[in-house]
Image (tube, rainbow, N blue to C red; front, side, top):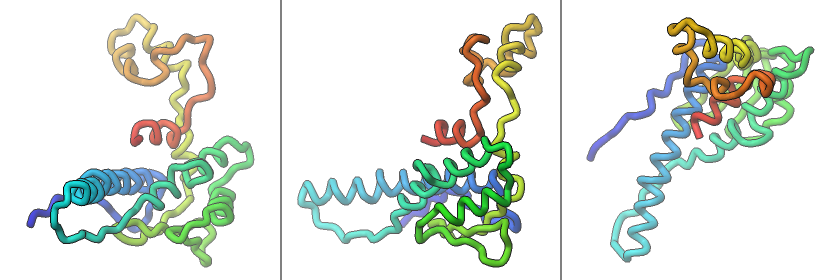
Amino acid sequence: IGILDIYGFEILGVNNFEQLCINHTNERLHQLFIELTLKGEQEEYRKEGIQWTKVDFYDNKPICDMIEKRGGIYALIDEESIFPQGSDSSLNKKLTSNIRAREFRANKGDGSQFQIKHYAGEVTYDTNGMLASNKDTLYPDLVWVCNEGSNPVASALFQDHPAAEKTRKTMKRAATTCVQYKKQVN
């Protein structure tokens, strides 16, 4: 029997936006492991008629969907980040009234916290600071100016940034951290 710990799941004293992203990545890794190793292999055994003992496992796809799909936690964080009157408190209210999953629980006492029941355990997240963390303050124009400048150090800093390939005329509002993160994790 071998055990492979690839997850690094953490539950800190105060869990904010960054910890939500880290724990979501761990959920995705866990889901990938389940899909490729457990579900895939058991299906292959079934197709080939190989005798085996079925392995029961916790399928965390509903947690991943709750976080990353349309109408999920990331979408609501993005939506609230765009509103001029958006605040961490209004974000918590939005999450509490819109997320309907058994893995999500609103904290009745403190108006800034909610819980997610991850595969590794329940984590309490604090929405204080989430909107600020989600707003990417590195504007595409700044990336463009650095990349087009004559300073080799400055132009090397952001050459892999998504805005590096765009022209100055096509610059839009900077993508939020949630948008960039979802692209990378998927």
